[in-house]
Image (cartoon, rainbow, N blue to C red):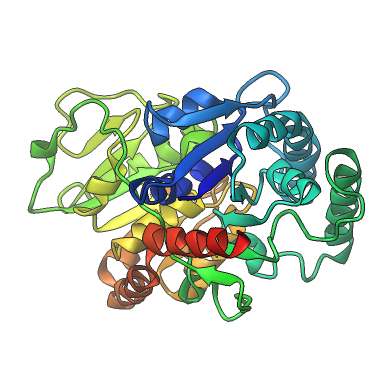
Length: 393
């Protein structure tokens, strides 16, 4: 049997896709361990029995890791790198090295934003694979921004000199040995790169803790169901958007019910409301089986989970990779985009009516659903990692 070390940032959206892969490897008898700056988060998502090595590093929401909400575009990217991704890599590197020494893995599986995993593996001469939990960087996002791309390369070169092998050349965001992309070209588009080491495995879905009981009996079989979520990282920024959505919903309450995930508790939860259910968290995967449309921030996991179920979307990107993922949704035909900061109830309602009733959007979502399911998900990703481990011996 082989050993695998998953190196992940303390971000739910980056850990969740790896959880299903890790579970497959464990079921096949392999040793699986994790390195993360938030071991409690890993154990909450991967199970209490997960073997996790603690690393230092900033955790979202902690002092110094809170991003000003008004940052956009290049400024937001710069903040993400200078105040989060690069400090995270510097801080994680010693812990990753200790985890490698303890586990002695055959393969290090490094999330594309956990640079320390790739650079430490490279320095120690270990084979490493990339877990690409967002496909934004494979969409030519920086093709028209050469100065931005060069700035990123310079920062990675400096980081490599501090924690990796100064003679190394591989981009720590993209392993030259094995790149697992949790999407498919049907969503990414024709610019999706092709190479023998790149494998598009589609979403990796695994069972998640259900949390408090969801009132399934509340759902009205005579009305369309809409799930609204802005993700766990945007809990403090969505008040205005959610308020506009509520106004749009009230005009359509005769034919639409909505479930709103509101972890920041920005909306008052009304008792006995038959039109909208507001909860701090929802059982997203089973709920998507009964959902007709999703309104979201274009987070990669939420988009892929919706399309895995063939559900069209209205996307309102906020920051980071979300505008790129939103572009993928629109270009594929699986949904419409609205402006997060300026959208009105009228525009939201119009977009929602379109994705619910225009068969073209549902057909596009069904096409991507078929591609996702054919790609193999966690099972395919685990098989690629097992082959890599066998070849490394």
